[in-house]
Image (tube, rainbow, N blue to C red; front, side, top):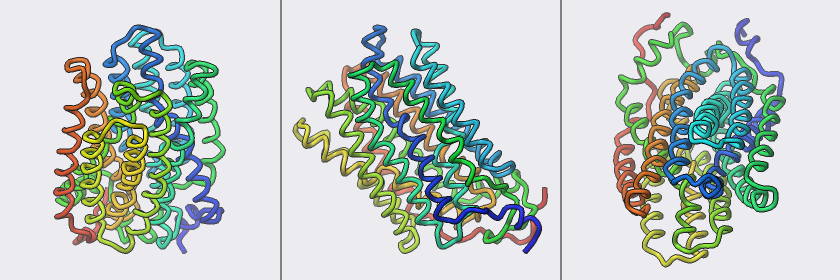
Length: 410
């Protein structure tokens, strides 16, 4: 075994690494998944239109996406732990600033800039990159699913707790409570410490540069199609997360329905993500992605055409939740299949940038079009169309490793 491999070999068992990574995903995804709960109380208190809150969350999604490739590249180069700790601190500060946002500009700095940058450094995306480097190959598919499922479970736990806290202690204090929970990421990140210097199990030339890796990826048609398809995932998820509670309120639902629908999405998401992770090692991954995107379009169509009842809203949460982040295990697994694990965090980060660009447009268009038309229906129909398009885009993807004729040096 080489000196480099000795340097990067973890001192923790795979089980312990998996548990700590999953807890980080749980903690970091929960407050973000609860963002929609704060739209109405903040807008009512300050007299804002919904486009104000929507813009700040849209900026959050955009910066999360913009920052992800850079955070991934830094994690690949200098180790995951540094980025996780920095990201968690930025995220916590952003929640505090959001709690005291009395103007749209301050809200954009807190909820948009700081939380967006924080998420790029401490979300489950970097955890997945660490799993790819630290865990044995036979663990990866299931670990990718488990890390995603843990974030989903955070979505199940945090929104109902947030709803109760908002009613009992106020939305300002609830954001402060959420910020404190982010500090637990610091000790949990220790077992995920690694430097991306080992090339074991990657099959890659050890001296491939970042520039060469990016050029290789973006000249690979299957990677480009994967990135384009991921745009829809972000559009649909961010729109629903930010606007579903307000939409349900508009159609006459009590406030608890919004919180519990987001929670049900998170619980079903845990099952869907684990299932997708398990299937990723047994079924062509492009098929999994196509079925997921098409299934989302069907779920949205049934939801907007069905009678407005709490039961139908919760059923939508179950259906959509099963398909929610189940795209992540096959997407990240495809990156590994094509390019190995050396630059996994960075290359998945660029796919995630597309995801978050979609998220930016989903949240922002939701607010803008609501203010213009008094309805979310245009965005719902756009979500259906994008789902069908992504189902088709993923079908031609080739699930084979990229061929390299010779080592690519820095």
